[in-house]
Length: 132
Image 1 (cartoon, one colour):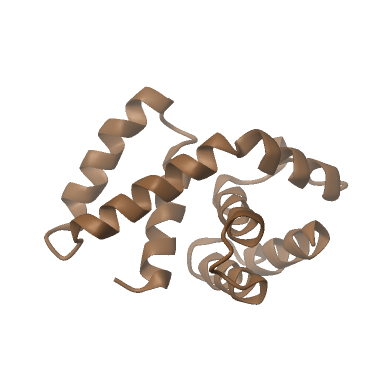
Image 2: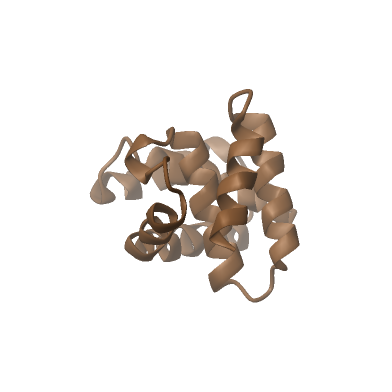
């Protein structure tokens, strides 16, 4: 599975966290992997699971940084798709040394173009620029 595919799966699961408790997310992970079918290998599932857990542990830091830098758009006002993308990109920029900053930003913008609203890609790009 490509990094983009893995990143997209993590984004989709981050989005689900707005609708399910931490306890329910374990069941959601199982359903997600079941729906993904046999093409998702065990190592991909483990990568996705570990990435999601790492991001969730850092949410206070991530959301605090977003709130600090985005003057008129606090975390509690952002739509869930955009916020999920920004959280993932923040994690990749500040906590994953294997992913170059420019790649993390570009991938976030591309995901926003696919899953976000009309202005999502520019919004995500603007917030990430402020975070840097």
